Length: 311
Image 1: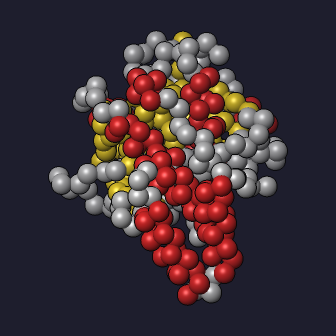
Image 2 (image 1 turned 180 degrees about the horizontal axis):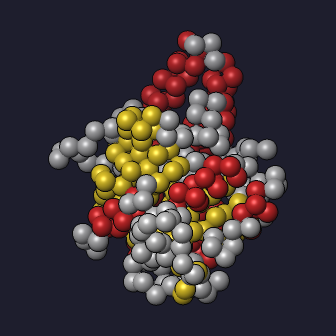
Image 3 (image 1 turned 90 degrees about the horizontal axis):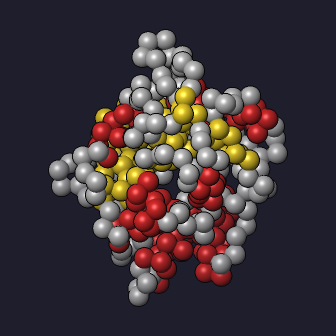
């Protein structure tokens, strides 16, 4: 694909005039990944069409849903670019598929956005405004709030990771002394120059932890990560997998093993054992033996390099 259509928005009626070639120096490609969740994806697209940012395009990657999602998205072309993956290889692989397809297009930023989100009109403009403060900023995160309770902040851009316990924690209140270790992949604007410098997202994770891994890789190449406080994105957490489900436990635990081995190379066993014992204890105390088994299986597969994909 050598050219995408540009989404030019009206400020008042929410409708766009006819699209034209990408010419804006700060064009943003918005990337959504869908897996058997067309309803949320279409809702997200509707909110994106109201953005007040001057030049952006929307790319939807369907991860081999096989439930009619792809056919629904095709009705949106050419206003939305639709890509169908032949297999479900995870969130990171789908994002890479979209960004690779855009390699010959004049895109300045990639906005990786979860499909179970709703954005405000200025969400993208605020992200770009922060990114433009310095050429050293490789990625910018949004304020993520609960879709069902917008007064509740899920995280301010991202979070921190303890090198001792292996625990990842979203930061809910940002101060002048806050230093984020990672940006939340639910809404992450990546500078194209940074992407070309450090390469694609790691596809080892399949789901979860790929955002933390990418943030750490950016830091190792001296790219900064930043937070746009006024960029608000409403998120229905884990609609696809289900937060607290055995699938969540499996993928999260598997990803934590890969992350700790990659970024705590000489002492990864310590944070792994601490975090693993804590997660297992909480499941057992609550009588959630299915979750405990999922955690143990995820860790075992992370250590051995195996991956159980969702059906």
